[in-house]
Amino acid sequence: MKHTKQIKSILKSFKHATDGIVYVFSTQRNMKIHLVLTLTVLFFSLIFKVEAYQLLFVLSSIMLVMCMELINTAIERVVDLVTEDYHPLAKIAKDVAAGAVLFSALFAFIVGVYVFLPYLLVAFSLEIPISIEFIVIFAVLAILMMLLLRIKK
Ligand SMILES: Nc1ncnc2c1ncn2[C@@H]1O[C@H](COP(=O)(O)OP(=O)(O)OP(=O)(O)O)[C@@H](O)[C@H]1O
Image (cartoon, rainbow, N blue to C red):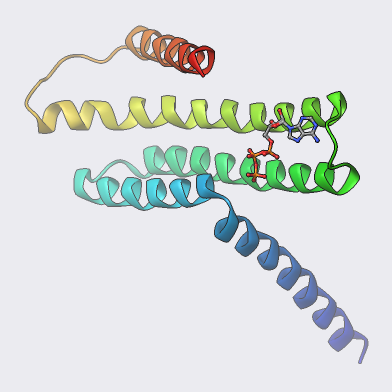
C-alpha cells in the first residue's frame, strides 16, 4: 500500500516534469530549433560515423542548451506572474536568464564546429588542418557578429 502510494507520487512528479517539457517545446520557437538541430546532428553523426565520445560531447552540449531554455522559460513565466508592468528588476531577471541560454548555445556551437568541421572539410576534400586557435578565432568572430547584429537592432 505504502509502495503503491510512493510509485503514484513518483509517476505524478514525472507527469508534471513532462508537462513542463511539452509546454516549452510547444510554445518556444527556440526549443523547436534546438530539436531540429539535434536531429540534424544525429543524422550527420551517423553519416560521418563520429567517435562515440565526440557524439557524447555534442549531445551533452545540446542537452545543456535545452535545459537552459527550460529554466529560461520558467524564469520568464515567474516574472510575468509577478508583474506585467515594466520593472528594471524584471528586465534584469529575463536578460540574465537569456544570457545563460546564449552562453550554453555558444558552447554548443564551439563543440559542434570542433567535432564536425574536420569531417566536413574531408567530405568536401579540403583537408585544412583545424587547430584549437582556429576554433577560438572562429568563436570570437561569431561573438562579434552577434554583438554587431544586436547593436543594429
Ligand atoms: N516586465 C518587464 N519589465 C522590464 N523588461 C521586460 C519585462 N518583460 C520583458 N522585458 C524585456 O523584454 C525582453 C523580452 O522579454 P519576453 O518576455 O518577451 O521574452 P521572450 O524572449 O520574447 O520570451 P517569450 O516570447 O517566450 O515570452 C526581456 O529580455 C527583457 O529585456
